[in-house]
Image (tube, rainbow, N blue to C red; front, side, top):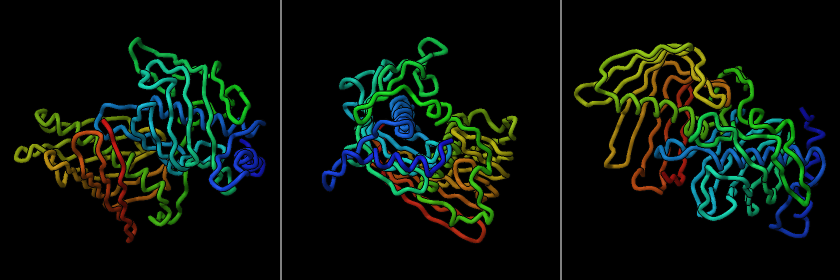
Length: 350
């Protein structure tokens, strides 16, 4: 891993073209450290370009495993993405908004060979303890995917690394060895990866609250929705290596309650959920565009967020309707005698 003191030198290159006046964009320049940062940004861009779609608002989000999250929506040239505290590893943290463009308008995601990251002065990178600096455009070429099964959609995990080239600030390099998709999106994490000795909700940043709302709670809501759609199965239990989930339908409402006994179950991208807790709908109004979920018991979140135990999690989505639409995800976290509220508005499009 590059030491933060050494990585800070990349900041000078990041803003080399931005010194001519207020509002000018920086660029990622040449050099080993700059190549590392540019490569991290390149892999994040490919991740955004190939992230899922078609499952309503449940897949407008791409978690950054170490910490933070990306939300995205389609544009005529590709996708616009908002990075919130996205930790790409090696001290590289990305914030702000950028467009990830395909090689031509309306190009099929399954046939991507090149992408352009177009920040428009709205994207910053922080390296170690250095102040955030504005990032300029970069392009990624030589993109191919190793698809295990014909017809599978490409994902950043199946990116073939060797042919990839990253161009930024007039320099073109191969993908840095510490910026592979495995390094950026699948680091080895445990539930206590971000220590929080007091277990306090105060340790959660805005990026963490978004991660809970867009990923941790979203994962539970997705499972609850799937089981609700299969309400005709009646009561049953799922047993996994990390624990059990008991499913209890309510014949009167046709809604479902889940009772979890989990031991550090990974819900994807380095986020873990553990404990004994219940998950159920507080409201399910499809016509009114509103769903509300409540989690009660002892739910411990960790890995990509500071390890925190909640006694209650409230999660409500409003504004659902014809896509694209602007929704609001809001709720409340309760734990350790404290509570935190959150509310985020964003556009979702499928």
